[in-house]
Image 1 (cartoon, rainbow, N blue to C red):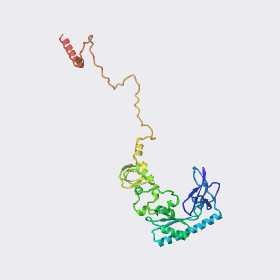
Image 2: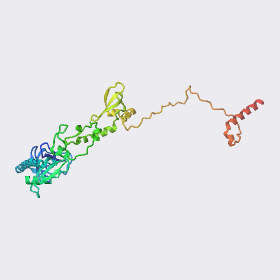
Image 3: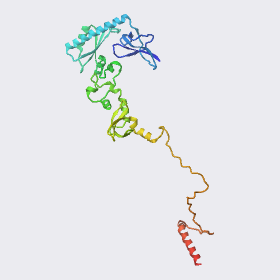
Image 4: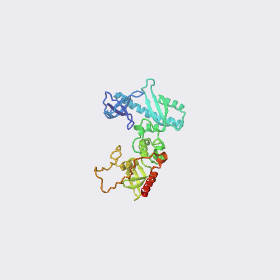
Length: 345
């Protein structure tokens, strides 16, 4: 368990998490945040508090901003605004297809006195060698130009997305994950670029958020047009509602549509209910054999066949293999002859 605080360099900008250390700033206080170019002033938007998860590797807060730090930060903000106007005017004079996205002013590097970083977007590569010389002469500082893509442009500028909230890339997203049109198809979204594109003109990053949920639902739910059995009767699947985990079924008897839970129409659930078991792992029920009461006398209604009468004889003739196979017919003939002999006597 440790303490964590969150700061932001711009109002409604991205949050950065810090280890407060020995400092306890309140919401709205100005603190110093360590960066690659030295400590910078940021506003505390989340006061230090304990978190249950073990969070490590966070940069430590450099302290509470003093009046001198606040004055320097205000001067740098004014310098960035002036540099932006000068950069736009110079780009227009050179006739370059460039758009200024953001300006950074660095004055605490040990190897550089003043550095102005200009972020711009362009449809293709631009030869800005003459532009750099004119900007260095006008701003009296070292100039560095960095070309950014459409997504980074939206991140730096910020804005409001189609959902009415601040852009995800400008608030909490750290890395841009790949987004494809297949994600929009799996979620049954219209393939209209105006509907599924963000402020940057690319596919919206939020298409990635719920895509695993749709993949899991489509893998287990019955497909459209499948005949299913529901508690309301038999029907055909005509739609899916992934957020509510339901399936829209058109009943065959009445023709009306009803929303059924996915568990009610899936075959594993139906097989489970048809088995009559109380638990999925219960063994199958084997019927016990009927109990027969023990008695010494046989019932009167039962008929027991009498054993055949075998004539008594003292001598048993030896038989060959062929005679043994036809023992019964020959025996009958022999008995028949004996009966005839008795009659003749």
